[in-house]
Image 1 (cartoon, rainbow, N blue to C red):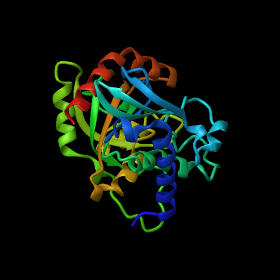
Image 2: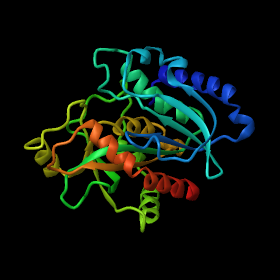
Image 3: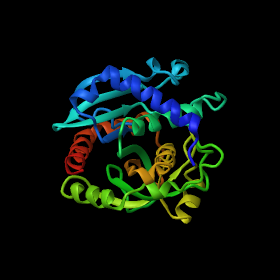
Length: 276
């Protein structure tokens, strides 16, 4: 059972986006890409329309949050129409703002209300395995939710985020990565942040329970998408590895490493989108 109020809000906002982007007349995308840290410059897009999230109902308080250029784009990628969201809202940005969980949910539910059924969710993440190196890609085949913050779900919304992860999408991503970038499958653990997990103890615990990567996003998107699995919504979750399981690192360094590989990341996304 989905929260009716949240669903109505997303559908109302989708009407605004459709009317301003003219997507109805040009071509309505079934695929959306949520760009994580460092992925923002990866795509060679033909942008047909774009709008900051702060211009949209439900995201007004984003103006007080810093660090991200939050934009929804209607674009073509290799001739295919797509929605692209850059600068996603994270659950760690304003923990005392009661609107934050609503915004985290709305950014995904809006895409679904726009007709998206194929959701590609990207992030920058840390490795928890010596076999997964900086510069590699990890395709999530499940989640470790034990240490995650509360998700943007409401009473009665019983769901499993792993239900949204599509096996065929995973196989497609691994196949398209061959010869381009080293790719793995593994479990993704979400921590709230914004502080990084401890190298000495936290990483060991996460590794012990089966996680291959750790980051601060993606799980909320999968949770929301799983509420719509019976309507055909499927998720592909991709992590770009920006740091090893033992090294000291910073947000700035992670961003620089992702940008250095942006060409490969963009090519991978283009290959995947062309086959969906």
